[in-house]
Length: 234
Image (cartoon, rainbow, N blue to C red; front, side):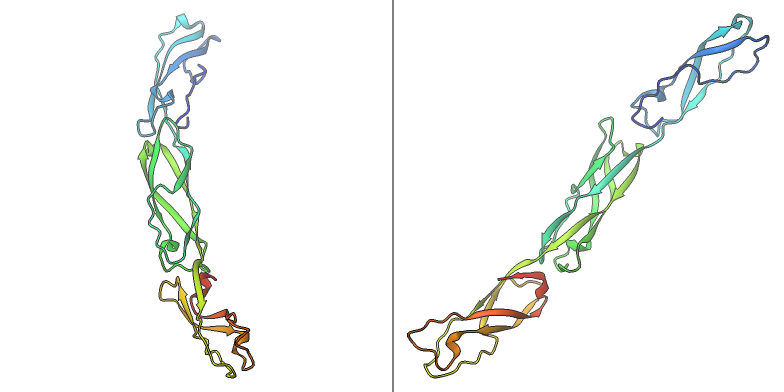
C-alpha cells in the first residue's frame, strides 16, 4: 500500500500447496502491522501473518502458515515555491517558508525549504525577470515516507520609483535660454545607475517670453542614462 493509507485484508491474499481430493482453502485471517495508516516506509517490509484457514476438508491437514511481506511505498508530496515580486534595488532574503505543500498525511510537516533565486540580488534587473525560484532540501517530520517533487516559483523584479525634477531658475527678458539637458535633480537611483541628460522645454526659454507671462513651466522628458529601464520615472 501507499504510506498514509489503510490496507484492509480480504482474506484471499494467499496461495496454498498440498490440497488433494478437491479440498479447498477459501479464506484466511491475515494481519500485518504494515496495514495501518501510520505504518512507515522505513519500518517495512512488515510480516503478514495468516491463521484460521477456512474451506472444505481442512480437518484432514496439518496446516503450516508461512508469512508474507507487506511493503509500504512512499506517498507523493509536492512542494511548490511561492511566486512573488520585489522592487529593483532591494535584496530579498529567503526565510525558507515561501512555499506550499500538497500530499502530507498523518500529521507530517514541512517546516522549511532551501530557496534560491538569482532575482533575489539587489542588482537583478526588471528585464531579466521573471527569475526562477528553486526549492530543495525540505526539512520537517515524516518526510522519509514521501517521494518529494519540487516545483519552481517565479520572482518578478518590479521597477523602482525615480523622480526627476527640473530645476527652477530665472533669465533676463530678451535673452534666449538654450537648455543643456542637465538642469535637473533626481531621487531614487540605486546600483550606480545614472541620469546623464534630459529633454527640457519651456515657453519661457524664448527671447520673446514676457515677464508678465511667467513663471513658465519647465517640462522634462526622455531621460537618458544607464539602467533607467529599471525605473518608473516621474
